[in-house]
Image 1 (cartoon, rainbow, N blue to C red):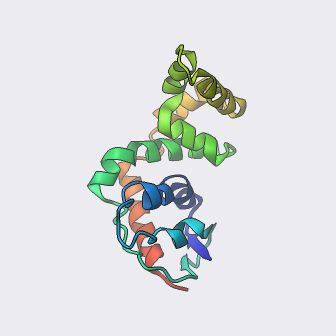
Image 2: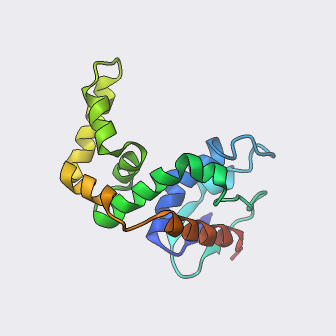
Length: 164
């Protein structure tokens, strides 16, 4: 099973945020309960011939939902800003920065808490690939915004309906 999106940004959005929203987030309680399985098991590709080569019981996810964007819109924007500024960063590092930002990661890593070791490791992983200054600059840049995100999500929603 393969799903092809037009850009690397769209692939990153799907693999690192939207697939989780389909299975365990925004659409977690959607019926039938196994609606997410094909989407989350598909290989996600980038190419000109967008669409999917599998059938599915649901393909009408409102990716531009206000409820969804109010909760995860900014972290998707942050993830893409970091990837655009530092294209060599692994996707999971971009996701961590999108989720927490560098300041929040540093705060969690320095707190005296039971899961402190987890956060210290996550911060070390991030800083193996980029400096704090690079990450702050990437997040401050105006390289990707809500309008860009909505445009990508609209295009992705259309692509998810195309059966190849």
